Length: 255
Image 1 (cartoon, rainbow, N blue to C red):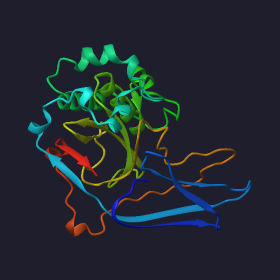
Image 2 (cartoon, helix red, strand yellow; image 1 turned 90 degrees about the vertical axis):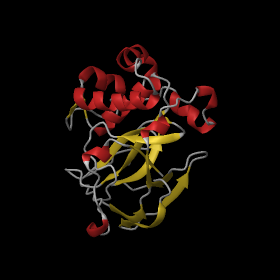
Image 3 (cartoon, helix red, strand yellow; image 1 turned 60 degrees about the horizontal axis):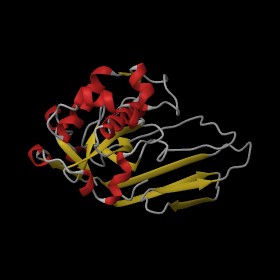
Image 4 (cartoon, one colour; image 1 turned 180 degrees about the vertical axis):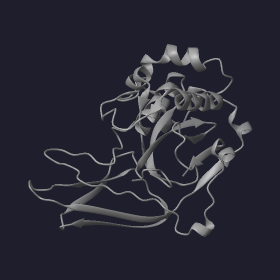
């Protein structure tokens, strides 16, 4: 969970089970860990109300590329291959498909469009070990797989990219949703190759190199999830206006 702006939150575990919240060095994501005895049925209810902040950029200011040598040090890890994003294996493909495009923003946007038009969105056909190369080969997956492929193709073109997991308003059926962000023009820009989410209806949970770093839940031992309900709604519908299709294609970054 990222530190949101102007927020209130609560975590309720029933029956009461002790849990510990922690962060990792040089990583802003918050984690919660807990140990549950065998044979115990328990529920976790997490609720939060936050002020979502985003910026819409004029594409003209994003046309200038940033040499790798000039990237901020904290951005550099997101240009290398990772567990689910084998960018080193996709360099030739990415160069042939997108290398001719004039700038990083155009390339990242073309990658998003190519994934949307080429990969079939289908639940239940992939698992936690599915990688970007698998998705490229099979041409099918879910939001996590779409994001991993987008990240890998960006990195193959020397564009830093990272995984963005979050809540999304009006996703049907309601679920967590995954996207990718590319570092362009000094900003982390949001891309949704599934085109399922309303671009101004997102709540960021966390960023990472890929889903292995920011899984919503990780189980160890004999644990089974029997029910999950996710909701993400504006506090008042009167003040919320979803972006139209034109704005959905604009360059957006989330804090």
